[in-house]
Length: 497
Length: 108
Image 1 (cartoon, rainbow over the protein chains, first blue to last red):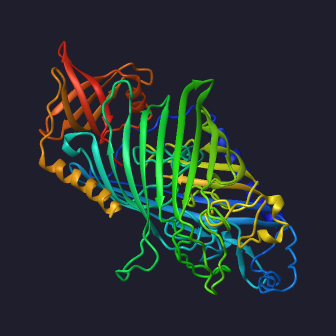
Image 2 (image 1 turned 90 degrees about the horizontal axis):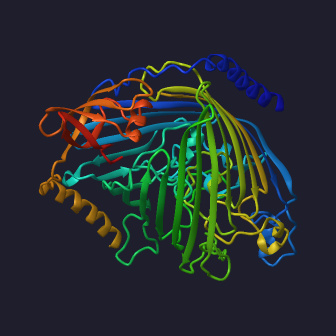
Image 3 (image 1 turned 135 degrees about the vertical axis):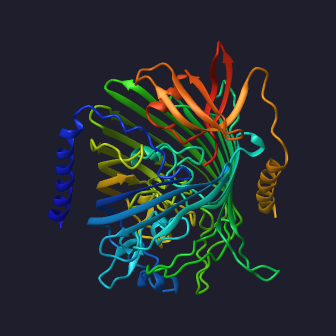
């Protein structure tokens, strides 16, 4: 198996070497920019092949689904723990294709859409990334955001060959003949700043979101205002709204559930190359215990069964691009965020009536928690060779919970990790003259991620986090298979047109 | 109900925008929203660019001189290109239209 991965990595590195001689020539200027084939319609998109080699370490823990633990719950003898072990997937290959359309319908009205397919090689479902597969085919998930594809992650987690609508929205600009806009539909609320750097994407515009707080395909709306303040170039503010779960028809007395919604206020006082600053507040309301997932994991199909409460988030993101630093351009960023939970005391009760005692970030006694996270890093772009080298680090505290399940990471969305995540990468753009549009480019990317989890439950808001060293206590049995360390060597071939 | 109110307020703003006229521009300053039809920069190190826009309201062609570095950088690396819609403020001085504010129309 190692030879297979080595062959893939060697092929990618060989391609990099082949690309470099051409890239070492002076970069050719892009052709005179052409907006699109038609004045009113812009067509673009991307294709990505990605290979991952994944290794992880599972600590010794008590497994809630283990027959001995179930017997223990029924009054039987003390259960036996599941022994720690190494886990791996030496080779995971995925294909992603996206088609972007933007139509200007009238002077101040435009409609935008992105259709995307994200498929695992040799599979027509998401099981390759959802968890630990036994010989019988049973899958025990590692992380809540990878149990199965759901509304907020469709098109962002490798799955089958179906084409999904990643976003589709309409925007009305220049309201009151002022820089005010309103936009409604399935939002471009994924891949926010500064995650565009490692993806080698253009910096998101006014539609962008801070990657540390939101990476979730929302259906919603935005009302924005970009005033002309000389001292604050590029400033704008947005009121955002999104729906994460629609409860449907109920009796007038209700069904115990409510729609799950999020509102947010985004203030960007400065948006220039030298400095981009974002201040954000979000509130998630009536947070469900589990999204609607059609899954073949041990959980089977899931759906919300209880509202657990609300969560507030506060975030600050800074990004700076400094040109002519040595032979290239330096991009650096730093993000920090806080979360504060407001549990309603309700807990998850299984279909057999068993009360898990697990509520919004607590197990047992209901209490509000506060968590924090930080994300720092940079990318250096060598102009002459079109080489980009990046490094990132993020840390999430014990009680860190974000809303980022659509993060472009295989193990789990790294910005939702409780612990430390390190990542380095190298991007080599080919010295190809752009034809389809001014942003057209072809590049290869190789990178390495190292996750060092300190607590369980990354990207999971149900139940209290448990320190890795305390998993040997039977009172801390887990429904998800804990992962203590994880690595991902990855290589991609990407075309943007 | 509160959440419905948020969406309702958003929609009300949009509707009001279609009903009420825009405010007047400041003295000596001319505002317009238009689409770029030509960008002429002398070279990668040029300190100014001449840009022609088609006014959305009148269809008239307006040519302005842009000198601010932030906007020039965007021309050079194609973040602002022909076909983009621009919110512009300019003033006429010595027979030239000098850009005072040049930004893509906000929105997503």
